[in-house]
Image (cartoon, rainbow over all chains, first blue to last red; front, side):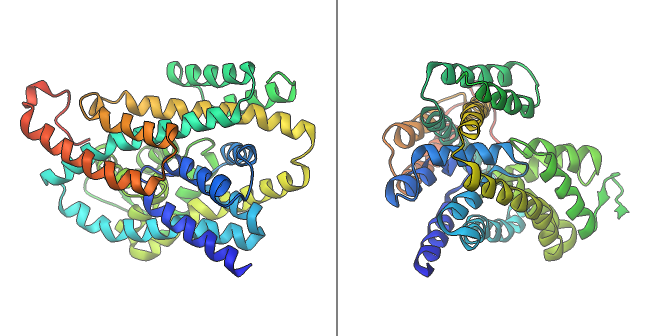
Length: 174
Length: 197
């Protein structure tokens, strides 16, 4: 059990420091670790957990809480969550002071400019992998596509879409 | 609570806690929208431009953007007690709620009805992620040569399934170098944006 918790703490601490842009960027890596490297759950179970995290309030990084819970109960949930947010929080606090000081510095603009496309690429990777593992029918792909269109062209609250997805699922349409 | 000359309000740790608790409990499918609304519009902790400036740090640093924001604002207004207050406000209630959801999933996750609902929600959740990526891709800041870095990241992570550490170790310096070259060698008039946020 201790070994398992240590493994969780280690895995998520590393992810924490890689998570430029937040949960979306490390989701593919998390799935790779949890499903392919450790075999803690199947890809579709992982996708279920992500769906639960999306349907709950709060930062969607809390999927790590569910992953930890699934692997090692309450201790796992706490370990995974603290592992995931601890290192990045400490780092951000340490850097915050310096960041203000270099407000006008050119290197700061260059770094921002260079990292932005990386964040976007990783986010789209997450979207692609979630779409692949969440959907096993044409109707499900259509639902994903409709969600994308709705969010791109309207200002609808995503909560309505989640509720609609739940109903469409319950009706057995996807 | 006290008011500054610019009309913004300096919160206490308790107000930071309640502010981010509100952000957490409203934030279904993404808390960033609510963070801006509470911090800038409702509580007036900081102005619009200041928010963008702080946010650029929070997006660039690893970790959940909104959690970084809670820490940075807490630290700025009330030192480490403020940072703790922001952290607790944003994380504790959602942690408990999601744990209950997880327990329900463990007990009832195999029921056909629950599986059906989750299939629908998962399809929507995937779409939310795709649209967030697309919206960010449409921002002018990366509609130039720098998008190559984003495409490389997508190929490496989504298609080739390479480990993220190696991908970031190669692509982050490459992106920054490319941004540096681009800023020096492409005249400002030919760029779609002058950098920054």
